[in-house]
Length: 115
Length: 115
Length: 115
Length: 115
Image (tube, rainbow over all chains, first blue to last red):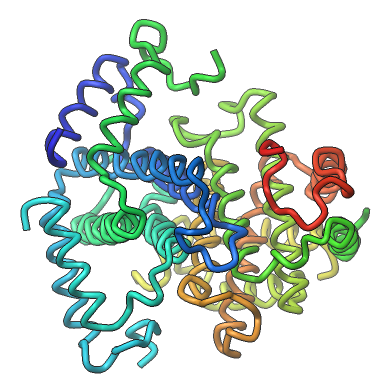
């Protein structure tokens, strides 16, 4: 697999072969996605700073697999909702460039609506 | 932008121009990711079934932007942790094919460990 | 135990005996809380409607324990931040009564800002 | 209001007056709860350490209200599922005392299954 279209196609086959598409409403996929996002957060929850060096090799591998799960549900949801993820993220970054002008927010992580 | 490498490159520039990389520890990115995953779930939370037809056009657009945010944080986290997302998801689907054999789980959404 | 003060006192003892208070920054407790909230959501994620009758006895018990975890972290966080939970929820319900006047929102789950 | 029964009673009235009980399936309440848990996490997401002193007064008040929302959905879910929260948390702490014996885990936050 090389790109998100390949991921989508493989996930379509995976679901079709198991007759699981019936469970994959957008609402259920959004629920499943956040459950995986929480499993991704879990190895970090008690870390002091949460840098990479605080993760052991086993935890890094676990994190890698949870990230794969998040991406898989994101791709399945995009497929259901006919959303092009690359185009959506491209558009969102452009919006963020306008919301957070580089000279004003330099080194400041407050949300734009707090200015 | 065509693929996840392009997304990563654009996000690197975006953060560098704002001097925001200092905030992007893996722990913080995993927290930001789940916050966006919740914003993605929010439009679905009171829907009966949660199909696409229950979302209005405005909500669909909001969902699209929240999905973009989830993907952006996933790509930034992968960048910090030196993880290739496409390869990770490919490997994870292969593991799932072994965990959920198609003839056994056909039409059944229970988790594999409940068999 | 009869009330939230008793829960707080028992959790203080539990943490002190294990020397775990050092990990319990508000940020870490808020992370742990959402991880438990996701474990609470997990048994519901593939259900059609998500009513009680769709949960088996074993899942009901699991849900009960996840709810206990959510409450425990909420009480620990309130303890760290010197927040009285009962008073906070009382105040919030009063605010919601003003935001969602009963005659206007009757039977309508849209958010108040969509009116 | 003095305790969780009072909170439950006030929330029952609030929902009944708005005819909102129809939306409050356990699945929907569990979704709403995690959405609030994310709003609770959000003010902490970019903080370095996440201690109380890093929160401003306005953020502390916001956190207090998000905690109220989490508690409200927890109480509503417990009401739907006929769960006594105080008794559930009491039982769960007893289980945790057995899982994490104080002399063994002293000052160590690893999960019990990593021993």
